[in-house]
Every structure is written in structure tokens, then in C-alpha cells.
Length: 202
Image (tube, rainbow, N blue to C red):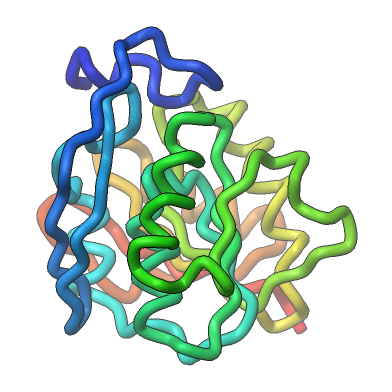
């Protein structure tokens, strides 16, 4: 993990705040975004997220959660690609949330995209889809707790689309998800990453 990212999953990173531009080609979009120090994938589109975009089609619309949103690239791509989508980004990193909301305003989708801390999501909010490059490095126990907090927010029949590194436990995570009652398929693999598609049973 790069030094600049060593605390990207903390609420207030210690690194001095410096905005860094990112140009990201996602689906058939070319997004100009701003990332920053102390935020995951500063100054770039990380490899896993790039694989996620390359191996999937954008959502058609609906209520979408970007879990562990960082500076917002996944959720913002969903909002731009699907004009009917209402997107919520969730992260514990306040610097990431600031950048994600700034990016939403710059892209003209702030009326349909909001990045908030987990407690900022209404208790009764549900989602048609979850899109995520989940924070694997928080540890297995914390990751499992995170997923078991948010997967039940899917509507019956809803899906989660995630990218996970094979060497970071993608296959064991797939088995664990199935054991928790969430049918999980692996529709694609590329560059050492797995795309996992998780369903909440109808």
C-alpha cells in the first residue's frame, strides 16, 4: 500500500490535504475528477476499479449504493451513465466524502448523488444495487461485518457488484457470501481480480 494511502480508511487521514486531478475512462464515459492525499487511489483509477468497469455494463437506474466510495468514481460513473439512478456513496473517510460531493457538483449530478458517513444513511433506506471495490485491507472480520450491515439493505432480488483481488481472498469471500445466504457468482476475472455478483434472495 502506498504511503499516501496508509490511512485512507480512517475518518481523518494524517497526510496534508492536497487535491490531485484524475481522468478516468469508465464504460463509455470520460470523467474528469479530483482525488486527494489520504484517500484511496490518489491521482489514479486503481487497477481493481478499472477491471470492474471493463468487465461490467452500467446499471440501468434505480437506487444505488457505492460502498466505500473513496473520491466517488464508481458511484459517480453510475449516476452519469444511468440518468435515472439515485446514488448514495458511503465512506468513513471525511476527506473522501468531501471530494466525492465536490466531484458530483462538478459533473452536474449533485441532485442525484450524495456521499455520506454510514450514520448519514436513513435507517429505512434500501437499494436496488450495491457497487463496490470493498476495503479488503480493513481485515476479514471488519469486512464481513461491513457486508452484513449493507447487503441486507438490498431489496429482495437486488444485487451487489464487487471487485476483489484474487490474492486478497476473493474466492474465500465468495464461499463465505454463499454460506451467509447470498448466492454469489463470478462472471469475470481479469488481471488478478474477480468480479463478484451477489444476490439478495427474492
